[in-house]
Length: 102
Image (tube, one colour):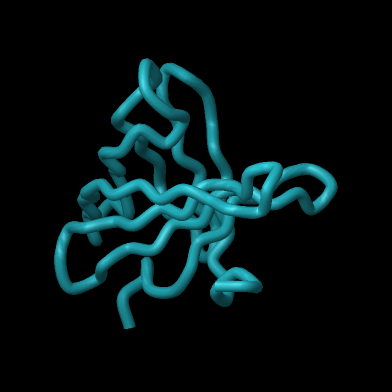
């Protein structure tokens, strides 16, 4: 199976709920579920991605931190861990099952 298959869950201190990323492994689309809001609802983002199987470099084009922040995030896939960085910081994700409640 594709190394990016499955759900990628943001790893936050204390087990807090972060965002979830799902890669369309048959295309270049990526679907992002944003962290829950105070009322329990959550937003969605769509973007695109590239994956270089030789170098394991992943680049996600989406405004992961919202408008006015970086819209390109990249990092190297390391097994079940993916760290995406941009000028606006670093986001860590771990490959896992789909988030509870989805």
